[in-house]
Length: 163
View 1 (cartoon, rainbow, N blue to C red):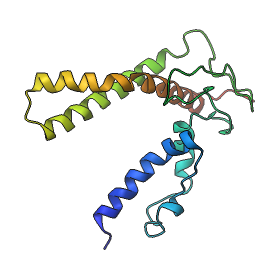
View 2: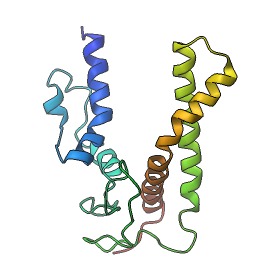
View 3: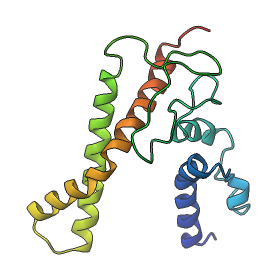
View 4: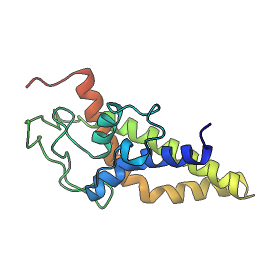
């Protein structure tokens, strides 16, 4: 029988390793995390997920979409991929769809924060809502840029730009 604490730690590490990889360049593979849970891990699944959180080009997955990390500050976007030439901004108003993704991610983030505050405190609902929004604000730029990356991936999946 697997220990639930070990499984929870493994899941937390698997969620965080794209962030660790994107910030420090340290590659954390599922084999490095644990050989005990190898049955639950797929080696092909983290590739797209790691590329999204690492802000990599959806076509070649080697070059970065942004000149610096989205997790620190306000990065500038490359116009096209330095490796394969994929245009990231295909037309005027291209990132309008990213606003919808950003809105959905923001609401989900605020609801998770609100749920955590509700579980931990005995505050009224209006106080929880205000604090959840205030705690969300530092993460808003990161989610905005992450939604651009998700939009580019979604667009390339539905309507790939030819080489």
